[in-house]
Image 1 (cartoon, rainbow, N blue to C red):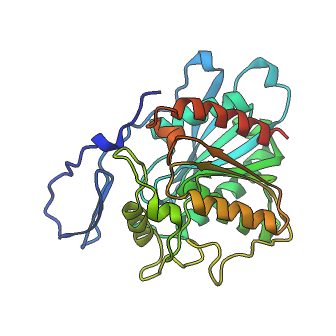
Image 2: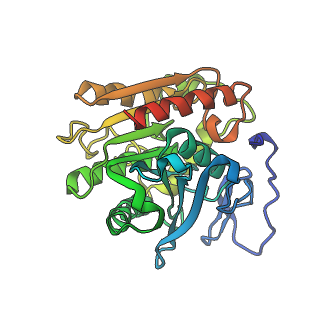
Amino acid sequence: MATISLSQMSTNFRIQNHSPVVEEISGLIRVHKDGYVERPPVVPHASCMVPSELKVVAIDVTIDKFTNLWARIYSPSNQQYFSSKLPVLVYFHGGGFCVGSASWACYHDFLTNLARVACCVIVSVNYRLAPENRLPAAYDDGVNAVLWLKQEGLKGTNELKRCDLSSLYLAGDSAGANIAYHVAKRLSSKSVLSPKGVILIQPFFGAESRTVSEKQSAQAANSALTLSASDTYWRLALPVRATRDHPWCNPFAKGAPRLSDPKLFKTMVCVAELDILKDRNIELASALAGVGASVQTVIYKDVGHAFHVLHNYPMARARNHEMMIHLKGFINQ
């Protein structure tokens, strides 16, 4: 996979006759006062085609045509798996709730390899983005994707006929991990299809108060997440005038879903050592373990936010290989 350099992103937004810019993350998103949103093509999109030698097939499916909710499904094509049921992983991409796609090439490559290594079916959800669709739109899309998966899996539709719905995992990175966390909480309260486990890769949470890693972690030019960008994402994703102590941002805030849910599922938290979110990730993992959840926390040295898809650190490929092995072990426990 080619390295994607965020430090060299084009900041040349298209010149349009629109109102003044009110929010901007350089090279990624620009929001105008009249509501117009610009997202430059920073990351190339990939079709669902997968090289045959990888022994994985992928297809794009529509989940809800009215909300334009769709998913890309990855399934191992190795003959040895044809007669057996496989774990299924519902994955949510990152991007601060505001950018990103299930068709981004970096996610396509990462999930193709994860399906191959972990021997699982992956449903990569293309949820609605903020600020056009602020939270809880992404959470709603996540729940609807799981309900759709249950319905289609029971019908034995296409690649989903090989899914073992009793081995359902929710996963995501950054904002996608936040979505996976909140969707899991919703599903456990509804008794519809509770996950067996949740994988949180550098989960995107926040609060009005700052952690040490947020205040003191010096971010390189190629960092995927700075404190300024984090704050902007939250302003664009949360309900208007909400603070970062909103329960969707701060899992310890008043009104947030209880950590001590009676249906505790096992959780894996993947932390990047150089990430500004490191302290929050470790705090969440410790809190979940403190209420009795089975939690596996892994800290990946010498890499920062989104290293597994952007490969923007010297040690990123080695750490990504380690993460693949850890994810395989967690999913197939």
